[in-house]
Each structure stands twice: as structure tokens, then as C-alpha cells.
Amino acid sequence: AAPGTLSNTPLFLTNRAEPNIFFMLDDSNSMNTEMMTAEDIATWGGIMRVQNNAGNSIDYKYEFGTGGATAFSLANSLANNNVIPTDAIMQTFYGVNYATQHISIRGAWRARSSSYNGQYYNPTQTYVPWAGLNSAGALYNDVILDTDVTDAGAQKTPIDPYTFNSATASTYVNITANFSLTFTFPGGTTGTYSYYAPSYYVWQDSDTNGVVDATDSHTLIEIKSGTPVCPGGLATTAAVQATNGCMLRSYVSEMRNFANWFAYHRRRELTAKYALSQVINNSTNVRMGVGTIHNDAANERLQMASMNASPTTGNKKALLDAVFLMDTTPSTPLFSAINMSGKYFECVTGNPFGTGACAIQKTVTAPATQAPGVCQQNFTVLVTDGDYTDTTPTTITGNRDGGTSTSFTATYYPNGVATSTAFSFDGNPYADGASSTLADLSMYFYERDLDTSLQNRVPIICGVDENPAQHMITYAVGF
Image 1 (cartoon, rainbow, N blue to C red):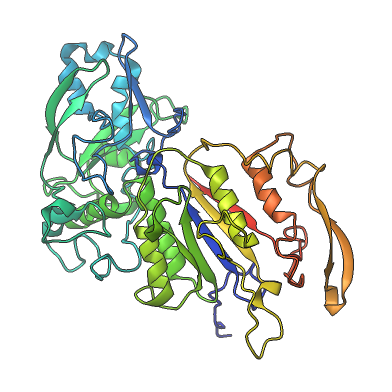
Image 2: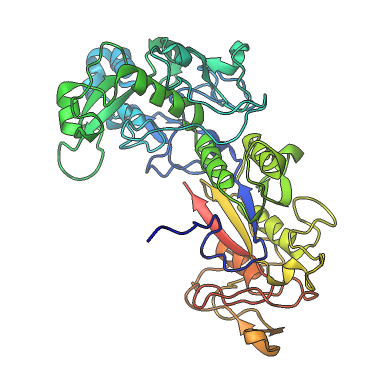
């Protein structure tokens, strides 16, 4: 049989009333980093700590440097010492003493291997541009177009795709040229070196322990016209690639892929913007809005609105613009962020948009006899990479998901029959022994009737979401 028409609406959204989805984006400084490792570094997480034999250490956060509102500079990355030197530079700096240096110095190569640093370029992945338009109204394209037979496009690789202008040198960088900058080494000594950016390490698990150890075998692959291409292409194993020192694609294709990664994916913030652009681009029959955890820039937030089909016009373009404009600032106030989202759905002050702002639709539009909010599902999607730096509001404390807090009585309409029932959503499967957590705050906005003026006809999903009253469901997407 021929396939039917595929719905653009997620299957868990069982209601004809357009659901509300509010994206709450983490715009803390850690989202600006170019690393995602397993290292647990306080307040940052996922970066790399490198120390010398004397115990002096530096927490490196970049392979290139900062972007966004701060002008891109290879030497300027927050504290001017956060770009990690390459392995070759480490060996040159320490000379004959390199082999006896601290293990973390000898493991600096891992910053440029996706096996250790998940944020770094992975040659087995194909990197594509964001969906939508940049600030000049142009579609996001591959840095090197499919029709190109040279690497000329990479000579103007966007630093921030949204503000890129090929006629403005400050908005792009030539990644095919050697980068030269002054690195800071553990202990504070500096040195100026150059290195070739389009490159990566292929890791082999020398001791078969499943861990990317500093001393494991690693092979540098430089994306250059003279580097051979692996006969097996993308199916080539790491062992074969390391032995032959080959690329997985032709030079132009590999440079295109690296340039796309650099422009659209190299920082956590860029990756988040890519993912959100794809989700928003493919969404219809839904209302969406966006805010940031700091709520400090009006052009980085947008109230809930229905999504039109095209990402180049209307509400969808406006939403994407707000996402692309997000820039970073210190601290990670996640409690404040969830509280603002909840108050937006509760239609009270303290929300991201000020007095009178309300995410839920309360207006009745003929021929309907009830407002959409009567049966509207409401979601907050928190996109974040780190631990919170604030605390739960003093009025919303305690173990709210632990089985000892809120219940409410409300009238709902199973099979169309008005029924008054007491609802309580504490306990399993969400119960825990911790108090005043983000989960507790999220439960505070789930286990109540956020608008008692509306009938309670929100569809339920047995075992998943059984609250028929107006409530907020919170999802967290973490790095």
C-alpha cells in the first residue's frame, strides 16, 4: 500500500489545539566554549585542565578563540590564556623535557580529537548549515558550495553565521591559512606560535581500556590537498586511517565539512542554535516562543506565536532571529529561568515579558465555544550545558516531588462528563530524597492548576502526563 501523509506534529501531541512550546536557552559563558569533555571542572564542566610538574594549571576552553559579541580574536579568549596549544606546540615549547612533563601536557592533543572532545570536528559526521536566514536576509549555505572545485570559500569562513558579511573582514576568518597567536602555558610563560587549524587526531585505544588516555596512540590528519584520501571513504576504520594518514573525503569535500563545522558547530552555543533551527524549521501546527536564562536582551526573546511553514518569513523567521541573536554572559541562573517560564504559563508577573504576558491562549474565537487554553498542552524546553549558580525561589522550596506536598481538587471531563477529582502527582516515578532542586521547581509548575478560570480539558497520557488542568511540562536538553 502507498504511504499516507506524514504528520508534522509530534505523535505525543494528541490535541487539535496548538500546543505551546517555550524554549529557555542557556546563555551563560560556558555555552561559548569550544570543548565538551568528560572532565568535571567547577562552574565550567567539559573543558580541559592542563598542569605542569610544579602543579601550576590552566583551564583551557578553546582551540581557536571567542566569538559572538566579543570580536573574534585568536589571542583574546576571556582571560587571554584559554586557547589550548597544539601537541606540536607543546613539544616545541618543552623541547627535550616534553617526555617527562605532566601527563595532561602530553595529552593536550585530545582537545583536537572528537573521541575525547565531543565538541571538536568529527570527520565521520557531515556538518550542515543552520536553517533560516542570516541578518542580511541570505540563506545559510555551505561555506564551500557543492559546485565549488576549490577551497576559496574557506578563506571567508564565518565567525558568527548570523552576522557574516563577505565584504566585512571582521566577520570571517581564513581557516586555510596558518593561525598565529601567543599561547599561555601552565605557570604563566607565554610564547607565540603558528599552527594549521583544519586538522584532527585519530585516536586508537592502545591499552584497550575504553578510555582516551593521554598516552594512547594518536595520528594527526591535516586537511590539505596533498593528504591522501582513504580508499574506503567514510567506511574506513580508525586503525586503517591512522596507519595510512588519510582523509575520509576528497580535499575540497573535507575542507567544506571542516569549514561548516567551524562556522555552524564549533561552540556549544552554535550547536544549540543549529539544533533549534532544525526543530523550528520543521515545526507546524504549534505555537513557539523563546527566552534566555538571563533575560537581559529584548531581541533574544519572543512571545508565543503560531508557526508558519517557511523559516524565511513571519513568526518562524522572527523566532529564528531571536535564537540566532543569543549571546553569552556570566553565571547560570537555571532556577530563575524555570521560574520565569512557569510564571509565563501561569500568566502572572515575573515572567520574561512583563505584566500581562501569558503563554496560554484564553480568547475564544468563533466558531469555537472554548478558548484553546482549555485543552492546550504546555511545554518548556530548557537547553543548557551546566550546573546552576542560583537557588530556588524562597517561596518554592522543599521536596515537591517527594510525595508530601501539593494536591488539588478540580473538575475535569473524562468522556465528556464533568467529574470532580483530587489530583496529586508526587511520588513515583518522579520522587527523590532531595529538596529544592530544579526537579522540585519543575514539579511546582506541573502539579497545580495554573489557570482556574479555564475548564480542565488538557488531554492526558496514562502513565506519562495525567494532569488534565493547565500545567507546564519541563524537558531539559543537556550537553
